[in-house]
Amino acid sequence: MDELKELYQQVILDHNRAPRNFGTLEPHTHAAEGDNPLCGDHIDIFINVKDGVIEDIKFSGEGCAISKASASLMTSVLKGKTVEEARKMFEEFHDLVTKDDYLPDFDKLGKLAVFAGVRTFPVRVKCASLAWHTMLQALKEEEQMVSTE
Amino acid sequence: MNKKTSPPTSASRRKFMKSAALSAAGIMIVPRHVLGGPGYTAPSDKVNVGVVGVGGRGRRNVEALLQLDEVQVTAIADPAEYWELYDFYYQSEAGRGPVKEMIDLAHEYDAPVLLDGAQSVPHMAVDVQELDCDFFVFSGHKVFGPTGIGVLYGKEALLEDMPPYQGGGDMILSVTFDKTVFNELPFKFEAGTPNIAGTIGLGEALNYLSTVGFDAIGAHEDHLLRYATEQLKAIEGLRIIGTAAKKASLVSFDIEGVHPHDIGQFLDFEGLAVRTGHHCTQPVMDRFEVPATTRASFALYNTTDEIDRLVAGLKNIVEIFKG
Figure 1 (cartoon, rainbow over the protein chains, first blue to last red):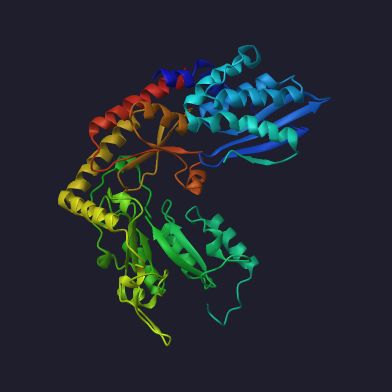
Figure 2 (tube, each protein chain N blue to C red):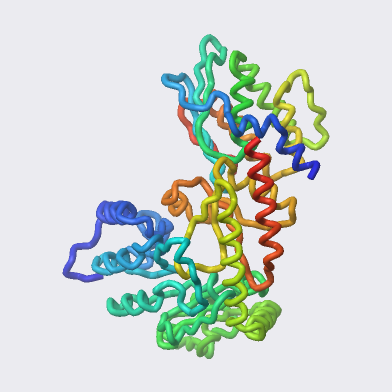
């Protein structure tokens, strides 16, 4: 049960209940659609970038607590960051949820550290990373469909 | 197809599929290779449609589809009518949906019927001759037998008409430069070294089921279904999805504010295996306006004690997610 509590931390449950930055953003400079076809999770990410800085970011869609909380926390963390910083955060987050021997840099990760429990549940890695992959795709291109499969 | 009518264009096919999909939730999405078109092989000039009953509309869909020259109904599965929970009383009997009725209807239009029995065979006695289906199939692992093996029943005359689909040892009677004579049934369809261990295992699994008896299995599963339905209804925010009058022994549900994958993760830690997701039926999820459901299926080996544990686990999840 300890692993389960580690996965479903209060912060995650809270963001699942009341997701931050939930909704659409019109107009926006960047957007992408992400899907996890196996479990049916779906997310839309909208971003407004001005002079290389993420001025606003929102998400909408449906998914489990892990995927919803991940999108909620990601948008909270990325708002105000530069595009370059967002890309670096993606790498950091990806290592956090996938690498067994990764030592999390809590200063860099901040609240995102609550996802450290994900790596012990390999099937949930996709849930936690869907928002991040979609965000990265949105920054890369205009309108695109992302799949974690 | 009927030579008097003009051949269907891809546009009219698309139009048909679109209107059919809009007219009812009970239309199976047909894989691209079945529909045909550029780069794909169609098995015939007709659109092959499988109909799955959702709500009470399954029968009407079939009737409407059979009127169309361009349509061939190739599969019908588990149609069932809606019912209210308070009317709930289920008696074990063969043919849970109006399957027999639909087979007879299909035969009126010379449409052969293949019945997919993968879900019914572990739970009830099936008499293929009484149903008069042309084909019946089921999987070994669904009857607690080995994986990678299944059963195809077909009417002899139809099987005689069908060419072998695979070449190999035992499917040939004689070969000369003049002609090839295929072996008799069933060897014609059993090319090469068969899955011997799987066959023996499947035979034993079916013997076991017969020993337990379908009356006993049906009565036990009915009891579990009634018990689970009553217990689950009492959980706050839980909605049971799929309430057919003679439904199989399983309960699909959603709980307000908790995604099925989270439910599954918690129950897994309780040692309870449920299926979560869209169950390969995305249109049904759309029909009920849910992203996914949790499904607890019962079989002859399940107990009411396990249902109690399921209910306790769900109540705990509701508490945790409510915060």
